[in-house]
Amino acid sequence: MKVFLIGFMASGKSTVGEELANVLGYKFVDLDTYIEKKYKKSVKLMFEINGEDYFRRVENEALVDVSQIDDNIIVASGGGTSCFYNSVEFMNKVGLTIYLRVEVSELLSRLIESKKDRPLLWGKSKEELNNYIIRVLDERKRYYEKAKITVQMDKVNINQLANTIRSLSL
Image (cartoon, rainbow, N blue to C red; front, side, top):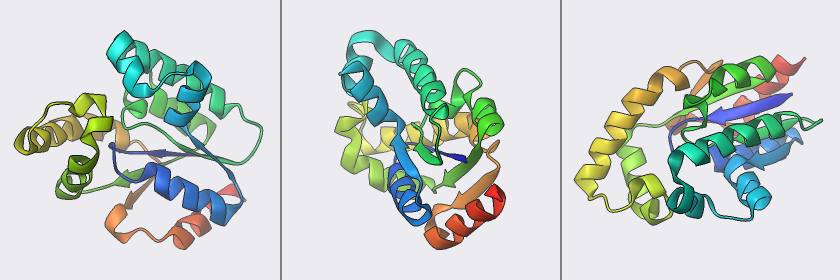
């Protein structure tokens, strides 16, 4: 089974993905890490040099690549992956999508700490970052909500989620 974790940046896709993969005995693929290894360039550098449009094309190709891995996998997608190139529909077709939903205040708290590593957040004050999260989350919600399962991250239980995945893969 292919399981795709989707949601806003800093929603916990990589952390939850690794934990789920361990509990289920699945392989884990972080899409950004996969891209960085394949292109021998950081996502940050790709944004700086080639821009977001280029990165989104690369990201879409990487998504198709990892979906062809012949094994049970958990894929932590990027925050915008599901919003471009009909990717959420593609992920729904080839596997199970899980939206990790996080409140704006929690996202703000998490992103304040990591904005230097996230190209779309560079140079934003706390207020600008809060407004950015609200605006972009509102734009992306329609894609995220196409997921087959939505998990409220402040109530997530990895073992329960793993059991749900097991029941769906039977």
